[in-house]
Length: 432
Ligand code: EPZ
Image (tube, rainbow, N blue to C red; front, side):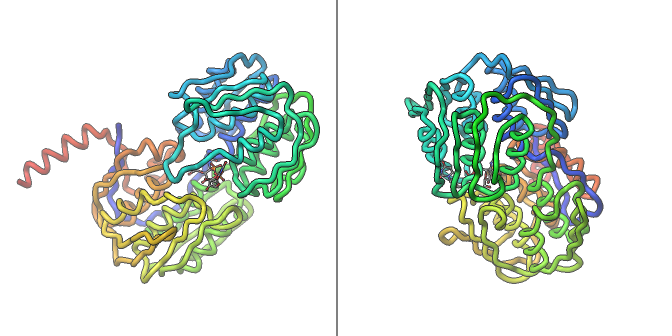
């Protein structure tokens, strides 16, 4: 196990390249099961969650070959329909394999998924949609068991525009018999990216990116080459890190349209922004001021960046409020930030923040992926040394984080926890 050791107080300056999108890749790694022939994915991210998903695909007889940022996948000879608890639990999107397995093989058995512990994260919309498409899916002893003779098109209304349910059902419908209409669909960029992939392999989809998506099922999908677009959440995290350290950071290869909500809130807090065709620059030359933020489905402020935003606002001038409307328990970062001197408390679905002049370095534990990113941001902006433990959470979704931050002038290194503990206890002994 490793920890991040961060010396805070150095402004981040410069350009940072952004790798392929985690959440788009994870959705596409379910859709690849639907195709025969080889799919070639380029700009493939080097992060833990996608590795876990590739290993899971191999368990179903899918051929996977990786060479740097190119991954070749061939699901022609799909031969399994069930996976064990250990392979499925680490990631939420293992569940999105259920529909593709039903579409290709008529049966599937998958233990309930896991993922970041940020709320209950039910799968009822997914089940409703699959059952409307003619499948019979039931939970037996913690395992979802499904069967179907032929999936058929259906009209599916989602009670909430769920990104995952939209992706799962849109993918599954691509091989169903007839027309599927998803109403109140999510409009997240990752839904649009998945639709582009499905269209590239032969699916007939209209309306992705709007709240009504229509899918006309086809008989067969064929693998193709597809470039994975850059990760908008990683990009947003670096922009916030730049602003929090009173630095000047440009993210490259990203669409400014995907950063609108973040940029407008950073400007409201007193940062500056400039953008071009495929880059966004944010800089801050003074202490930021407190603001109100409310998370919402796209194009609203993304829930995935509210935790780093809380860390940024912890040392802003005055009060801030962050209202989290998507997940009821995305709060694991708050007690850790308070260890660093932040003054935050939870009231209902909101985090109330009383800005302090500066955060202080401390030993903290990443509670989940974005909560971990929030602690790294706090460590970079804080006075003194911060140790972030449990960084396997951060490795799930941030590629080359410490290298990118070091290139921007941050002082951060990955050290083995055992080594750090040994040096830390020697230091404590000397003090006593
Ligand atoms: C995706 O999760 C992302 N994960 C999340 O990113 C992201 O936070 C979320 O979308 C919202 O943008 C992946 O793409 C792998 P949802 P997903 O279904 O699809 C409720 C990160 O940090 N709901 O849009 O699981 C649900 O509980 C991760 O990268 C139901 O009630 O999210 C939540 O309140 C974390 N029933 C809301 O909908 C369902 O069947 C939105 O969830 C499904 C969802």
